[in-house]
Length: 90
Image (cartoon, rainbow, N blue to C red; front, side):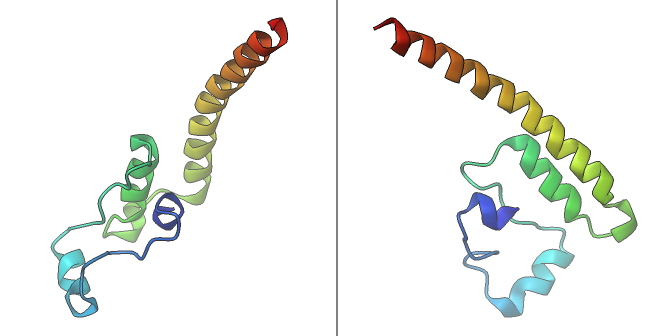
């Protein structure tokens, strides 16, 4: 997901490979990409939890992503409707 929101960016930019294990062991994680919604970044962070049994299950991830999509799709649909109505009135 991080790579998607950075348009194919290299993970852990600027961090030498030999320092990656210490970085992760210290509990550090990649920063939120510039164009990434906080809700999506929260999901990323949850997937990066050190203990695998504390990470969300696939079903939970699906539900959370669908909720985000539904909330934002309605906004996009309404905006599309308004724009088309404005265009049609000209």
